[in-house]
Every structure is written in structure tokens, then in C-alpha cells.
Length: 389
Image 1 (spheres, helix red, strand yellow):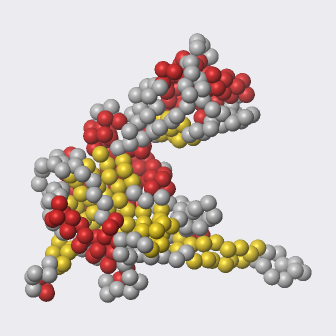
Image 2: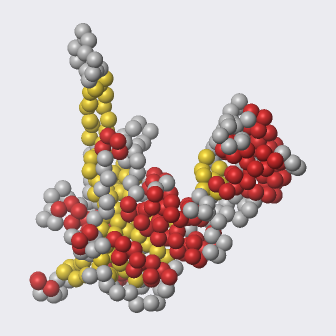
Image 3: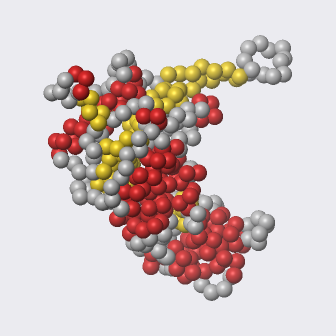
């Protein structure tokens, strides 16, 4: 079973995801410059969101190069700072195990992605101080990972493993159950420059601003696409189907409600999506992106407006691919108050009958009802689903 999520989301002026020069990320698509939010940025904002935290009540993953510090903190007595001898002992274990570390620092060369419970167990092993610490670390790290964020996003940590970590070869890799596209704008964009100044609250003899600078931003309507492989997710969670379903529900809510944090204190572009399409595929498990609906960019001015035209493009293109390839799926469409419907134009009908709902899609005007019906189908794919309106 595949769960696919497609969203149209218009953000106000913002710089949600910066490149190495501090400008909003862009790409060329269809021969035009588009605004872009990287998949890594989207996944992190979802993984760290309050909505997704409900799936992590038992155990959440920590992705860091500062694992030594975290283990030492767990090893320290409650309320006390980490002990230097603990840091040295932990560093020695990882160095001997082949993990690259920065010179004179307790920082790895590569990111490690481990459950919080594993870090706590390693801290306890350091605190107890009995037996072979390296062997205990290897046993703890090698335990089966049953953590929703690692199960979704996967894990790949490469290093030249030596004793005692040789037994871990191949155990660090977790095949991701989630595929996430870079969000791209449905229209062409040109980054703008914000010239800003800061005044000194305590005036002196000097005239003018106390600080002058420039920052780049843009405003864009994005198409976002995510795919979850349910069987891979369940496998990654040790066959725990209930946890897999909880993970899907929390991910769907977080994908819709979470926003990247970049420059939000100076832009506050907290704009929820205007349209969300979920497709659940059980017979023909082939993911399909509808990004090519926007290969020709939505024009600056259209009768439907930018958001309305973007959703209309999505509906028309989705219908054509569904009909053309015979794509079978349960489809659910949500738009607040059903302000926008997901439709296509049938030119063969009379003008007042031309606008048709996309094949088999059920429409919802309330998000909670929408999520509830999506999850009912995930739990019982063949069960009938009532419309939300």
C-alpha cells in the first residue's frame, strides 16, 4: 500500500530555506526559475513538529555529530554536568571502533541517527562502569530500531568499522519508507531584496541608522509531494502495524500544519495549504508526481487567481494521468470550507456541466474529518468511506 500526499500551499513573503549565499533556494523547472524548498528542510520541519511528536511518545530519533556529549550527559548524575573522564572513555570507544572524530573535539565527522533510548542505555553503561564498554555500545547500537522518524526517513551511517564495532556492519542502514519531493513553485519567481535598517534607541551625535543590511526573499505558491510505503514502514517498525498507522496519521497532520523555520521571526509566513489530495493505492503501487502540471508556469494573472489556477492545473493533470494510465486509488480532497474543489474540465459536455470532480475523489471541508476518513481507509482499505460533506 502506498499513501501519496499532494499539496498546494501559498506562502507570503519569506525565506524559508536558504542557499549558501543566504538567498531563498531556487531551481529551473520547465525552463523557468522556481522557488524551492528542499526535501531535507521539509522532512526536518515535519520530524521536529508538535504534530509528529505524538508518534514519538515512546522513543524518538536524535540525529547528531555530538553523540559523545549526549551519552556523557546521560552518564552524569541528575543535575550535574558531564564528567571529563566519561567523555574521554566514550571518545576512546568510538575512536577504536573506526568512527572519525574531529581533532581535539568530541564531535564525529559524520551524523549518527539513533533512538533516544539507545543514548540513555549507553549513558547507563558508562555510569555503571562494569565490563567491556565497547562491546556494550555495539550491542546497544545493534538493537533493532523501532523509531517512527528513523523508520520514515531511513538511516545510512558509513565508517570503517573496527573492533568492537565490526559486528555493526550493515546494521546502520535503514531503508526509508518515505519519499519526499523538493517543493517547487507552480509559477516563475524572481527573488527580491529587502533593504533594512536598525535605529539606535539611544541617540548620539552620529546621524543615520545604527545598522544597514540587505536580505533576499520571495513569495511563492508551492506544489508538495510525499509518498509513504506502508509495508516498508511496518517492516522498519518491527511489524508493529498500530505504530505504523499512528506514524502515518501524525505525518499527515505534520506535513499539512508544519512550516520550515527559516527567517520566520522576520516574515511569519505561517500559511496552511489551500488544498490537500491524498491517494491510497493498494492494487497498483506505483507512485506518481503531478509536478508536470506546472511545467508551464501558472501566469501572474489568471481569472481563478494564483491558488485557484494552481489547484485547477493539479485537478486537470491528475485526471488525465489517472484516465490515461488507469491508475486505481482511493482519493480524498480537503480544502478549508471547500473554497477550492479538485476538478477537471470535460469539453464534450455542455458548458454548465463541464467541470467534473477528479475521478472518485471524496471532498472534505474540515481537516479532522478528512484525516479520520483517510486513516479509516488505511486501516481497512476495502471498507466503504462516507463523503465529508
